[in-house]
View 1 (cartoon, rainbow, N blue to C red):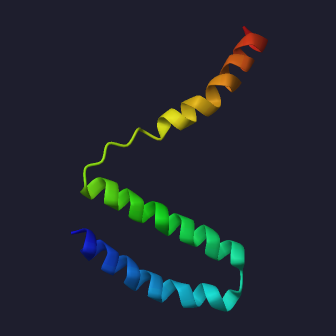
View 2 (cartoon, one colour; view 1 turned 120 degrees about the vertical axis):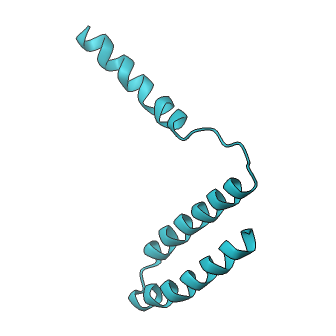
Amino acid sequence: MLLFFLVIAAGCIAIDLPLLKRKGRTRDRLVWFLFWAMGIAAVYCSLNKVKVPSPLYLVIMIYKPVNTLFESWFY
């Protein structure tokens, strides 16, 4: 099943990459590659039932100090 998704991803990459090369923006290609890599990693984890912690924990870790700061100001 993973091979099926990799073939589909390779087809989409073959379509998208020439369009990005024409524009000549290196940053756009880098971001595009990172999103593809994260997507393929998510498919891999999903297919192999790898337990991954929720991304909401990262959001909580980032905003908890901000929340306590505002709580101390306005409480």
